Image (cartoon, rainbow, N blue to C red; front, side):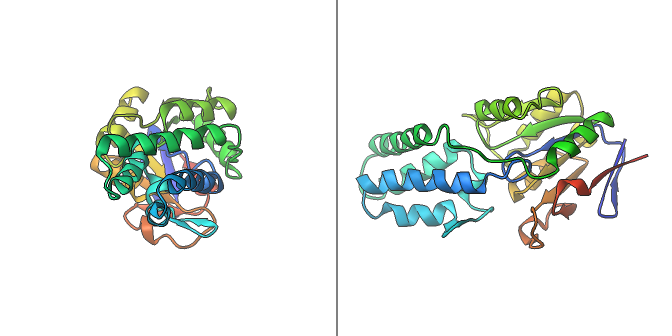
Length: 244
């Protein structure tokens, strides 16, 4: 099967693997609120650490930078980064990690029922079209495996998505082992699969794994500079077309 995108045709493709946040799901507002909740809790205990974390997380006013830690890193990576800033205040590592973990856990509980992030408009229709055309579909996210599974279930995508892979305590993006693992679970080789993602880490991971192609997506924005490494960039998913 062939997939066309902005005058580029990827041939003999069997599977398409998508990132979740920022690719299928518009999570910018929720992630920003989650990051702020974590920062407030940490800054309440350790005044002054919040400003550094705002920069590290990529929170700029009402905007979340799609290339910074909160948008592209796993929960574990964000936790370790937060703990490192706490440790800079002179606390030992065990204490720093505990303080950061409690702040993250409290924030998770606070916003547990507050994640109303919507699917990007047209995403569901594109997934249906691709599955009906015979492509195997998977999700490979920096979010936890539990939250990936919750997303698939809540959006009623179980019949479309063959692989639901998140990052827990193992390798994180851009480790190519993640893409290879997703391909193996779908029963295809990386050379038969395409990665669609909104982060340079998605693109780097797939290319290092030997993917057939990489598609960077930057919804409703023509600023694709952070995705220049991708084979092609798009602004919405309906720019993907199945061709004979």
